[in-house]
Amino acid sequence: MKSDVIRLETIEDYCNWCGFDALHPLVTVVDMRDFSKQYPSDKVNLDLYAVWLTKGSGFSVGYGLKQYKYSDCSLICFGPGQVVQVNTQDRRSDVSVGLIFHHDLLLGTHLGKKLGRYAFFSYSSSEALHPSPGEMVQCEALVDKIHDVLKQNGSKTDRGWLCDLIECLLEICLKCYDRQVVVHEAGNSDLLSDFERALTQWYESGFVARKGFPSVASIADILNLSPGYLGEQIKHETGVNIRDYIKSRIILLSKQALLATDLPIASIANMFGFTYPQHFTRLFKNLTGMTPAEYRRHK
Image 1: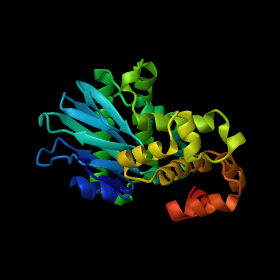
Image 2: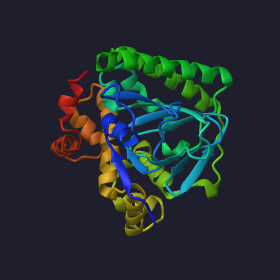
Image 3: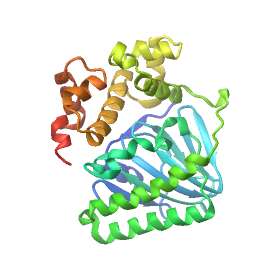
C-alpha cells in the first residue's frame, strides 16, 4: 500500500518532521551523526533545496517508484518539487549530514541569480555525485562551519555570509557533476523523471513561444501518454494534482527569472506562457503570498 506523501514547504516544517531544531527560518543543518535521532522514512514532497553528505552503504533514496542506493562518499542533492523517500536504517554507522535551505534565503543575492546553473538539483541527475576524498573534506568543513555559526547566532546569522558558504559548497558539487559521466539506461528511467524533462524541454525548446503555457495534454503528448494516465501517475507519486504540480514548477522557474533579470513583469509572464500578466501575478501571489513585484523588491 502506498504511503501518503507529506508536503514540507518550510524549514520549520522539515525540522518538525525529522525531529531536529530549526537553526534559522531559511536554512538549517541536519546532522545524523547524532545517533539519538532516527531519520523518518516517509515519502515527502520538498519545497526546499538539500545537499546530503553521506558515507557508507546504508543511505538509499526513492525517486518515484525506484530506489537508489549510495556507497562510499556521496553528495546527494534534492531540489524543490522533488518527491523523495530516504532510508538510513540499513546501517546506523553511516555518517550523514544535510544542509537544507529555502529559495527565499537567496533573494537578491549573487547565488540566487545563478542557481539555475546547478543542474544536479534536477530529477535528471538522480544518481549521486562522487567527490574525491579531498573534496569531501572540503564539503564537510563548509557544512560544519555553517552548522557551528547557526548554533551560535541562529536567525541573526548574516545572510550574505551564509550564501557565500553555500555557493562554495555548490561549486564543489558542480565540479563533481561536470566531470561525472552519468549513463542513463532505458530501464533506469521513471515517469517522474520523464515528466520533469518534458516540462524543461517545453521551455528550452521554444514550445512556449508557439503554444503558450504547458497543459497536461501537451506534456502527455511529448511522453506519448494519455493525459488521464499521466495525471493519475503524477498524483500517485507526488500527492499533488498534476495541474497544481505544473503551476508550482513554473512559479519556481519564474522566481529565478525575477532574481536573475531586470525584465518587466509582463515580459516574464509572457516568457512562461501567460497570455495576460495579471494571470501570472494572481497565480504567483496565490502560491507565494506576494506579487512578483513584491518578491523582486526583496532584492
